Length: 388
Ligand SMILES: Cc1cc2nc3c(=O)[nH]c(=O)nc-3n(C[C@H](O)[C@H](O)[C@H](O)COP(=O)(O)OP(=O)(O)OC[C@H]3O[C@@H](n4cnc5c(N)ncnc54)[C@H](O)[C@@H]3O)c2cc1C
Image 1 (spheres, protein in one colour):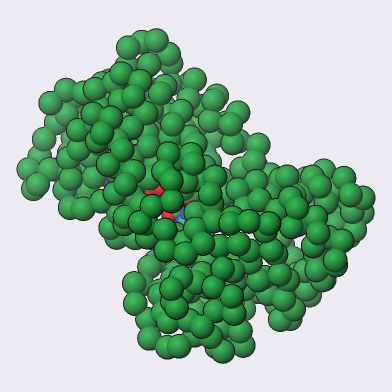
Image 2 (tube, protein in one colour):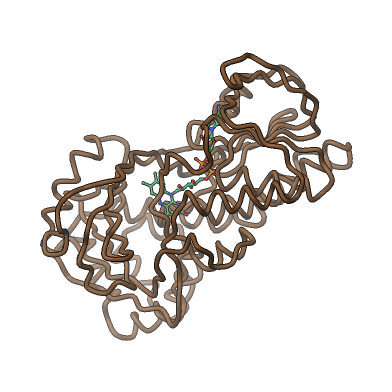
């Protein structure tokens, strides 16, 4: 078998990258180690309307619920209501969503091999185990879209992401206060370094948390989340659809090497403020597919991908990482003070107007330009100063 571009991993990033490689004229193969697309699911499935647009999908049967805002709970229990002006996001069924994305890439002429695992490569030959048999596939360009543990990245000798949060989640019946609002829970007892969540859809919720990698396992914190008075009053018992997964933050310094490029979680293209990876991954995957196709015809070098994706989202990811680090340093006491500040009517107004789950830097800039720099530095500490 011989292809211009082989994409490893049929998650959202791989599907979009292969679609764009084919669209830009490359003979493209997509390989996936599992027997079906979109399974197992490792996602809460909260996808912004902008992410849907970038993925080239309109709201379809994968959309389970619409989301207009969030209730954010400080460690002391104070509730901050962040209300958007219109629909901000959808809760989706990732299996159906991923299949819709792969469907688009097949429509573009991409070949697909399921039950086919990448095991290594040398120069232009990829080794796979496909349906139990060892095979080799020739490829001019290899795109590693194989997720947080990227074996393509490892085989190419590309460094790993800077940090991997541990996430855990399950689904359960849940009597949400408002089914159009997600709930976010903060505090060191619940999710050190990140947050817990309940994302409602159809009388159920995806309840989970992500946390710093360097303390107890994520499952040890679930009990505390379920004991939170808000969750305890809404959670109706029983659990299904358990998920355990890593969330990579902070891209390696290089995401291309020789004829290999990484995209999506494999490249750490994940928002450090929310852990969402579909939106940024899809933006970068479009660029990856286009550049890979051109590179296979020697019309571009893979460095063009590195330059273009960093210019598209690099600044937003870097700002997100600094916000993530600053918030992670706060004690629960400081977090309570910070949330009380955000809860002031004039600040809530700014959040309503400019809050954007994909681009927190916009809100940050507005908070700064509204004359709150000193207050923010006082609340968030000196580490935050580097943001201004
Ligand atoms: C608990 C949790 C909740 C999350 N919630 C959200 C959310 O609400 N919104 C959001 O946007 N993001 C969320 N994310 C992140 C999101 O799931 C990822 O960013 C996204 O799936 C990344 O897409 P990807 O295509 O890069 O990788 P993946 O979706 O991980 O796809 C990689 C694919 O590669 C395949 N693969 C791996 N190795 C090989 C191999 N050797 N050979 C062949 N195939 C291989 C895998 O089987 C998989 O299909 C969450 C993550 C976790 C852990």
